[in-house]
Image (cartoon, helix red, strand yellow):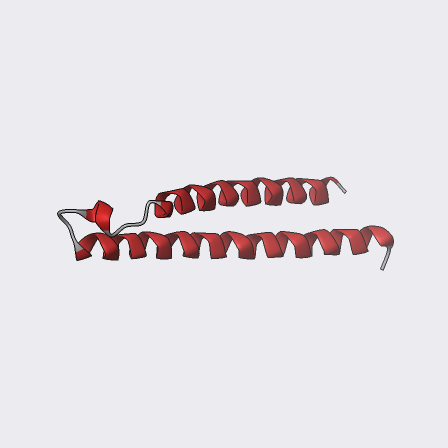
Length: 83
């Protein structure tokens, strides 16, 4: 295997890991939304008393991280294609 083929294979592995990270982030975000919904149902008249304020920040952070991972994955794929 040539050095170029090794590099391409390594970058494909990186891309696979990035895709796995994307799936895990989406799953985490879904679980976070489900947890928030469950908390809101505990006291529907006063959800602010049972839903931690940090949950919204966590959702924002997951979204930002997901966006970054998607951009990096796209960049890696374009680089591999260009090789």
